[in-house]
View 1 (cartoon, rainbow, N blue to C red):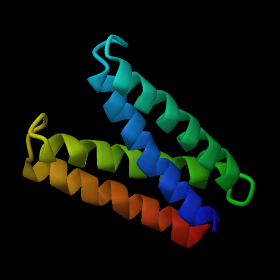
View 2: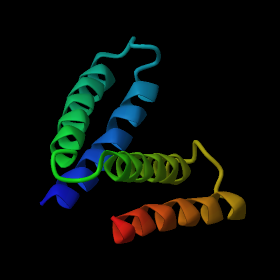
View 3: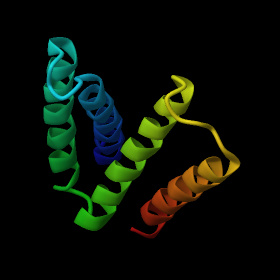
View 4: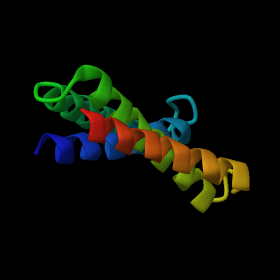
Length: 104
């Protein structure tokens, strides 16, 4: 259950990071609300996961999931370029996260 909550918290990290960018410096109300709700949910999920998982592993998975999804969202929406290097680095990032899970 902790791993599921941790991945969901990572997804919410991508949500709040994207909403933060969309808020235009905290000037747009809807992205601000999404940011706050996503941030609270993400932190709560991370905190819960850390009660059963090693802190370093939980944090690395949380960041890895959030960062990967944030980059993918940027590519899908056209705000970031899709490059071979970026794709390879994301594969390496995900591989490292999976590796941490395997050894923990």
